[in-house]
Structure formats: C-alpha cells, structure tokens
Length: 68
Image (cartoon, rainbow, N blue to C red):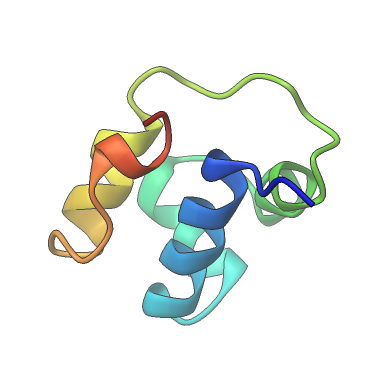
C-alpha cells in the first residue's frame, strides 16, 4: 500500500499539536477540513499549509515532508 506523503505529514502534525482542532487553528481552517484531508477526501490544500505546519510544530514536521 502506498502512503500519501501529504496525509502522513498531516497526521504527524496533528499528533504533535495534540488534536485536529489545534492543527486547524494553526493553519486557519476548521477541524472538518483537517478531517477531510486526513481521509483523502479533499484533493487541494492551501499552498502555504506545509510551511504553516512546520512553524506550528516548531520544525518537528518539515514542509518538504508534505510534497517530497
């Protein structure tokens, strides 16, 4: 099974930040959007999302992990 790097990096970000709601606040979306991204039901994301989550996780998740 191929893992989606975007979903895996987002999942790691959520784990570090403690919740989908916390990740959503960090990037300015609602929790339901995070949930849809994790489920693979939304095929787009803001271009600055990886950089925002890199800052929010204090570099524990690198922007390049989203789109290697």
